[in-house]
Image (cartoon, rainbow, N blue to C red; front, side, top):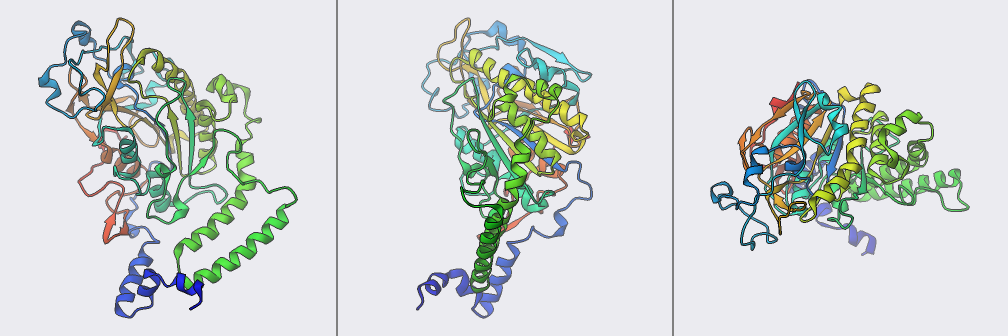
Length: 474
């Protein structure tokens, strides 16, 4: 047998060319290329796009968003067992003899008409408090970074499932045929430069068609590798090469029927269009000086959080469906006061500038902005507690997430935690609930946007019940 044909004779092809069983398999495989029926679209979509500012490493909600002034008089006291309730701890603190209560050393104040509580570390966000919605009671199933970020991104702690941006691309497609529907930007924080790594699978398409995976713009060197033509190859030669490749790939698809072949053709064509669209996107020289200054001095440094926030706005106005920034450096097991100051210097001014920039350009109303990490931090100190220093371990039971624009109710604080900031007391919000709410604002019913995988109607929000957090919706 021809080796090419032998390779092609896989399980998929066998089922496709069988009789009754093949017909069943073919219908299932064909269904994989389409969202789970037209009924997944809601009558109204409040947001056309999402900018997700993911703070990788887990910011301390107790030092930024959830003040507990009553803890000052309990400083150094062992966390009561009645509060901890035997809940799971990481191996980094499970062996500690005591769990000394560590009140935040930072001052809090109310801001805006809604009286939103914010730390003194966030003076710029304080100026846009009336545009912010705070959810104080997000909780997660994971206690370590990689499974927790994977869970936030895909709805499952195990790697290999589609990311939230891929689901949005799959359900809604793209408004710009010259840029990907899902773009990822990463930056290194100054709070902890050796922080947890990020893996490209976090923005992968999983079992969805490959064209829905996120495209990462690199934070050093060329934003997209191999986008430029090599020396001696002009655009006309590149176009001719792609035409010949497309013809060969169509022949392969006609013979085998693998939908990934079509995805490959589409990605080659997208890359060709990006040779023009990406340089234009990255060229910020025509931005007004006042806009650049608003994002802070780091905006001139490619790959910084500030530069990425500006690019996020430029991507949004070009119709990119899902933009996700990952800012590393929030994992503060020790030396938290100094490290969190650095992280807030990185992020506070650019985040506020992004919201004002979107609002000024009329984009905030239909752009949902989300700010948050993978879990929270403990109220007790990891390691020694001193007058000027402490650390905090991972805490999955409650943490805070900010939202703005895209049809959410501004100036609202949703949910409450106990006096130690350890457990949820009002309006718990699971990660699945948060993701369901993001999809809802995009006009997607999270229960009905499905994909046939291993005999199941797989979806972002998993099999357990998830609900839209209507208390934060306008």
